[in-house]
Image 1 (cartoon, rainbow, N blue to C red):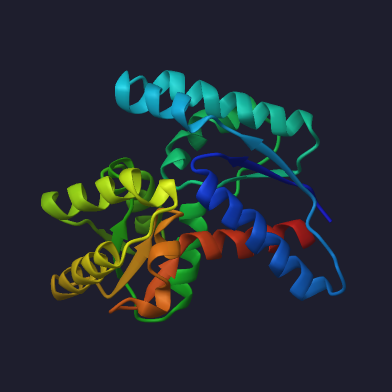
Image 2: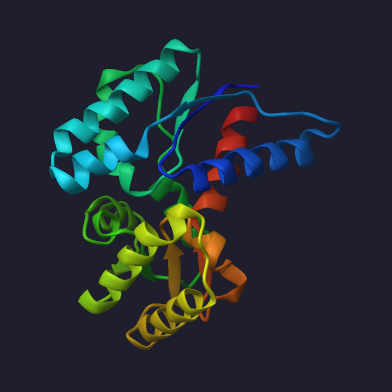
Length: 231
């Protein structure tokens, strides 16, 4: 079994879900009390937020991720999983610095959506840097998919709820209902499915409770990580 390197801490909430779900899937496949081989490099989220939000210093944030990736390689990881969607914007910059691959969450998500015939226009929910960035739309486009982004009011609500609630392990019914309303509205605007592209969102709103076909990027990433580890 290959060793999975995890960059976590962004937030601890989704990192804990990744550890739980990866081990659960491995045990379901391998049987007995089998556990995944995992090495975790946990980033201090406060340091990351200070760089990205307070100082708006993308280079400093990227250095934190690069240092974590290098530490995972030194610890013997065979590949790297980042337990956070928006941090994947740094993958093109960090990949040349290491000799082991990243398992990219957007590619895993695109593969899953493409496998469901007939789905083409994907509502994209996450923090601002995910919804406004190009790493999801570009990977979607390479797979014949189109990203549909919420409007400004919807983006503000989603981003704030993630930072003020979800990453602090707070999951409120009123927030869950607002997400359902936003997804339904995006469906009326032409989205035929939704990517829950923040690793905490599926903890608030499971895919089966969404008003359109929904894809948990967390679940898809965990499943792909296990496949890669067992290959």
